[in-house]
Length: 336
Ligand code: KG4
Ligand code: ZN
Image 1 (tube, rainbow, N blue to C red):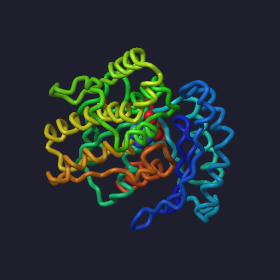
Image 2: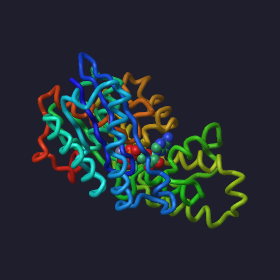
Image 3: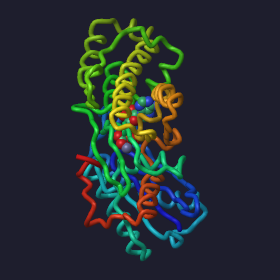
Image 4: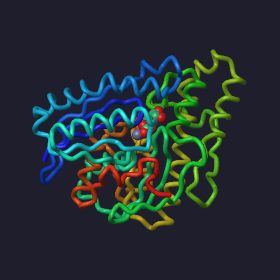
C-alpha cells in the first residue's frame, strides 16, 4: 500500500511517500522550508505562510512522487495534517489532499500533528506498542502524555506558557541568532561550558509535570541588557550551552518525574526539540541503566515533515482507527 503524507501546519510545505508492507519504508520525504519568507518578521506570519504553501504544495507533492519512483496513480491513500496549527496553512494542505484524493478516487485522512511527531519515533521502532509515556517538544507544544492502547491519551502535564522550542527561538532572537534558533543554539553549545551562567529552571523542584518557560525569556533579556554586545559575542558558545542546559534540565527532570509517577518502562519522544543532542544524551543517561526503552525519531524526522503524518495514519490503519475528516477535531490537543 502506497501512502502520500502531507504536512502544512506551520512554515514547512512537506510531502512524503511511504510504502506499507510488513515494515513501513519512507520512499521520499522532500519539503520546502519558508525560513527566508519569515526571516524579516522574526517569526512565522500566518497569512504569508498560507500563500507560500499554496505556491509550493503541488511542486513538493510532485517531487515526492518522482523521488519515490512511483506515479500519482499508484497512491492508495492520503494522510494530511488536520491540526493543530495555523488555520490558513492547514486549509491549504487539507484542500489539496482532499482534491487530489477525489481525483485519484482514494481516501484522505486527517491526522493530528502531535500524533505525527510521535509516529516519527515509531518509524524507527515499529514493534512499539502502547502503553508508554510520550514527551512532545516542539515550537508550539511541550507535553507529557500517557498513550494507552486504542489511541487513548491522558495528559500528565504540559507547559503553562511558552513551549520548549519557543523558548529556544525567543531566547535565540534576544541573543541575535536567526529564526528558528533551536538548532543553532544546539550547534553553538557543543563542547562549551554549561555552567557559564545559571539561567532559571522554573517549577523544577515541584512534584508535577508542569512546565513554564516564560521566565527564562525574561532572564535572558535581563542578561543581554546587562552585558555588552562584545561580551555576548565573545561568550556566545558558553551562553548558548548554559541556556540549552536550563531548558533540557527542566525537560528531563519533569520527564523523570512522569516516568516514576506512571511507572512506564517506555518513553517516546517527538517534536522539533527532540533533535537536540543534549536532550538525547541526558534522557539516555537516565533511561538506559534503568531498563527504560527510549524511542526517538531519526534526527531528520524530528522537525515537521510529511513522513510522520503518513506514519501516524499507518499506525491508525493497523488498529482500524483511522478518522474520517468529520471525526477529526484538529483544534483539540491530544489529551485535555
Ligand atoms: O516540530 P517542529 O518542527 O514544529 C512545530 O510543530 O512547532 O519544531 C520546531 C521547533 C523550533 O522551535 C526549533 O527551534 C526547535 O524545534 N528545534 C530545536 C532543534 N531543532 C529544532 N531545538 C533544540 N535543538 C535542536 N537541535
Ligand atoms: Zn511540529
